[in-house]
Structure formats: C-alpha cells, structure tokens
Length: 159
Image (tube, rainbow, N blue to C red; front, side):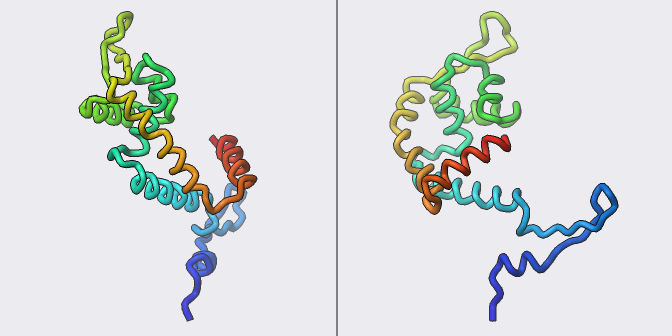
C-alpha cells in the first residue's frame, strides 16, 4: 500500500539541538517555507497559463506598480515591488527591451534612472488587469472567502 506523501514526510524527521541544547526535530512537511514555495509554484503555473503576453510575475508586478508610481526611480520601484537591486535591474532591462518601459536619467542625479511606462506598457497593463484578477482568484480557488481574507492578512503580517 502506498503511503501518502505528507505521511512519508512527517515520519522522516531530522534531529538537531536547538539554541537551549534541547533535541529539536525538523520535518520538511511541517515547515512554512515548504508550503510557501509550493503555493508560489502553483501561483506561477496559473500565471503562466493565463497571462497571454509572456510576462513573468516579477515583470507584471513592476509594470502594475510603475503605473501607480510613475515617474519613479528604478531603486524605488525595486523597493515598492520587494525586489533587490539586481533583480529589478534585470526586470527593467527586459521591459525596456520589449518597449514597455522608458528610462531617462534623473535631472537632479545622473546616477539615477527615472522610469515611466510607454504607451505600449500602459496598454499592456490595461489589457491584462482582468486576467491578473482571474489569476489571483484561481490561485485562491480552494479557499473560502473568509480563508482568503485570513491568508492575505496573515501573509501581510509576516511580510
């Protein structure tokens, strides 16, 4: 008889000593990171299947947030989308290459780039807002409305 995955994981526990020297058990299937990664993988798969414009989740986040903030610096967009500097630079470079974002040197600080959406970028965001809402609904489809609200509140509290 095949044992369900979660039961197999629960039985295999690594042991270690915690900060007080007590024996602590670690089971991957009981860790928040394990489930957050799985939830993210599910969301990314849904996103990829429904978002028709070959955008990544990070590109979409940058476009939507930039629409709200523009004009804004690349560094500020990174902070507002929870991306480190290397990640936001790569995201912005790809969006610029696609003609969705325009960059210009900041008039007061030449080291800083100021970002704005191009007309194509604005149109892409507008075209895909309904799809993005559908993606969120599908990601959360196994939860009740109360559970969805609770999950969002708890995740915001962690972040």
